[in-house]
Image (cartoon, rainbow, N blue to C red):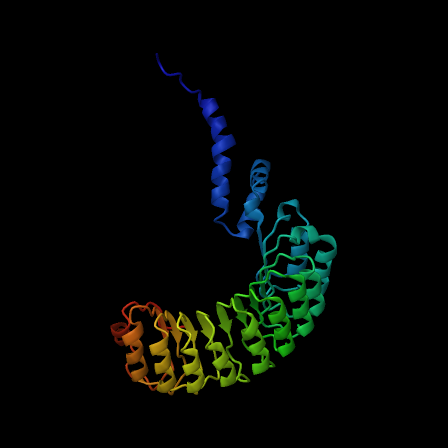
Length: 350
């Protein structure tokens, strides 16, 4: 019996109804938000196809855009963004407290599943705006507000009390926060995994020890450009199991304490000008799983530190920045590769 021949019209219909929509959904996940919006304008059919696929509308990216506040309000008012999980406003223009207050009053439903919020460089946002936005997104896990000098301890208190599931907190450059903010964080977020306190210049040993005594789940701690911290804090750190550190103002004594953290894989010591071979040899001998290391700008280390590091970490180090280390004479690419054959990145700082 001859197989029944499929009519061309039937094949075309099946292709249009089933195959094309699935292909478009796959392709659209690879394009930018701006291009995805453009696709909606191609035809009513494509509009319906794409808007019926929720995973495409989980993120809003207004990075470096103008009129970001108005754009954000307009977007979160649309049905397709009712389940948005990620909002990026990094260095966006025209985003102020008033926009976040409108979101609180009119678009709160769209933010109930928000997990990640990036407000880096949004310098017109103050404690008032932080209170408004965090009151609507209780499921927030990642919050970043780099380079904001208007947010104070009060704003951090709103974040901590309104968002109980924070695991990643970036406060880098928030120069007005104090030890009080760290105390609030420590008391409410023992499950915190990543904390960036770069250039939070009002912090002291006392505040950081609050974090170290209670946040036992930390996996990444950035203390870069904090000249107020002393070896007293670094001695406390030695009892932690934290694989990633960024420091400054370390002495050899402090570095020797940190060397007791055996599982460190990433260590940024850029501009730790008090460090010499003595402290670094302790790191090389104690932290044998190092993969990322920056010694940028340290003039007190010599070729000896790399020789010792090579004995313990030659098969693990993939990133090593020794630029500006004038005491290290054998630091050409070929010479470093002889010591660390898996090295792939030779420059961290530009």
